Image 1: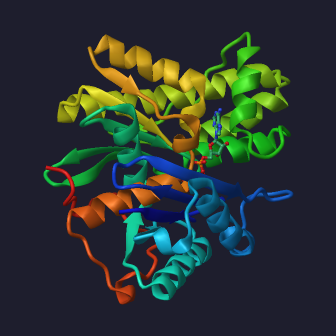
Image 2: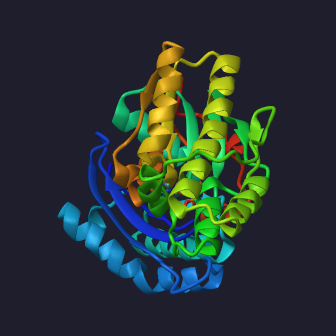
Length: 327
Ligand code: ATP
Ligand code: FE2
């Protein structure tokens, strides 16, 4: 069985193809980068509509396949931005109807976990999912993936991007923070906001901007923001692992590319006798392969969806999905 998966929750329109042995045959994507300012859902959706058929064609070419070779199509049903989700959903429904093949809508957050489990060889991890829009600690318990902790305000990546823009670093600031922080010399204390298993970043953002007004160099601000925000994430991840007794931690989402975050989680894991896993960069960020993968897992375990059940769900929660494909 060959599955084509379409990702379209936010910036990225991705198309991946996996075979029945779960080899990734293609993983093509095109990311929308706004000229200035933040992500406007309608503009991102227009971008996705412009590129989706080309990216599907590229993925098929890469895999050396024709449309008729595809047995199943899956797509990111949520959570995400409505207009973007609808483009991915519409493309998947059109493909399903025109080729006469089944369709499965999948939860984007769970797709991050499942591709990580499959590619890194971990079995039952706590996932620290740190992306632009999402910041959650997720783990499997009693038949579902449950959210043990999450951000109460903004996602870590969006926080870095917004703060970076306000500090004059330019857009897509996550990697710029990482680069600048390497040259940081002095740590300045910033609000550290952990409430139970949840985190919040708004106080940290305000305080970081006031450091700039006091003339603190950008490198030191970047260092202080990273150290503080990542320590918060590491603490809630550790607490979740202790609470539910997991000795594996998996990183996912675009911010998981940050080497300092990896280092801090790695240290925490080692101190607990646990192990950290991080998928390759192309599978950390939003991508179509993870959507194809989860669709394939779900379908193989007996999940079936009628087209009428494939409406997108902007607030699709991880714990709404009954996990039928894991024993
Ligand atoms: P989602 O829909 O899952 O919320 P997304 O559209 O935000 O995802 P991702 O590719 O998962 O997309 O993550 C993008 C985020 O990752 C951006 O906010 C970006 O600044 C951040 N990021 C990328 N590389 C790094 C890095 N090296 N350090 C910190 N943040 C990074
Ligand atoms: Fe994501």
